[in-house]
Length: 379
Ligand SMILES: *[C@@H]1O[C@H](CO)[C@@H](O)[C@H](O)[C@H]1NC(C)=O
Ligand SMILES: *[C@@H]1O[C@H](CO)[C@@H](O)[C@H](O)[C@H]1NC(C)=O
Image (cartoon, rainbow, N blue to C red):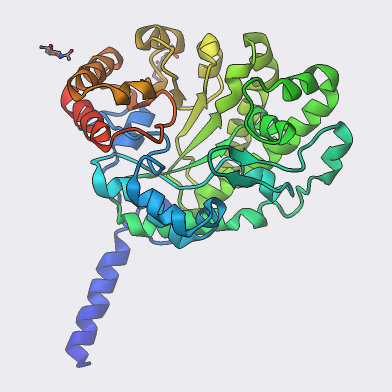
């Protein structure tokens, strides 16, 4: 190579790497973010357009996802950064989304704590050796759990580069009560009756369990931010099984501790705090209480009325949601109208459009196109 050419390459290298955002400067040079509407909405700043993304946007409704899954087991995809990134990228190739969310699963924490988790086709996650009695908590291995989750950080860092700054990358975790539920039930459950029995029969051990999970979650989220996650979502998907009183006792204190301790840790290390979303499905009864936990964004399921939610959380919280995933099966005109109506109710300020729960596997691809376009055109 001639000297001139080498110099040119070096200059291009410099230009590519000098343009970094704040976190990039701290840790590694990431490409500059081009569409930051999601982060602006989360912070209550003016947006160019209402940002939209969809829970489980990388998932089974996409034929290319199904193809990849034929070749690789579910948790192999999670554990292999190249595969996790490929799947994370798939919906962005098709739709004009305003966010990506790293492909993973909430049950990677129970795995890192020493439990076996298998994904059974048509059934969902199965934990063959669940936590049955308080004595079983001794089987959990919190020491070293974080290092066993390093593949998630690797996938996040790789994804930030692959995104080339197109949209922000969201990291996530399951919340303590939701993880405790799976770990006791040995998988999903229509009632969570064994886990709820624990709360009544072993209240002290339940607190120990939830605190152990909370500690692991704070470590995990800190690691995700260091790896490059630009926003975080905490999924309390099983809040729907708790009464309001139970949610306030067994959900809220731990959700608050996650937010407070993460902010504290990041601040002490001079790492910029990223916006955080709390999505407690089925906890529309406690929106005011949720709004007082320090989260920037509250996710809503479809049972909550947007205007009532706004009244309850006040003006300084961003709302996310909340179209019924079932509406994605309506004909395009109806879906377009429902989406437009929803966006009009929430308004352009402090709003992130999404479904009220994960997109379901049979959803037609065209519905995603209609949804995304209708959100962007509504206001
Ligand atoms: C919302 O934030 C503004 C600006 O920081 C503040 O003046 C106001 O009191 C807050 N409102 C509520 C209800 O917290
Ligand atoms: C959708 O909204 C338009 C305009 O308001 C209306 O003319 C049309 O009938 C609606 N379509 C459906 C299927 O609801």
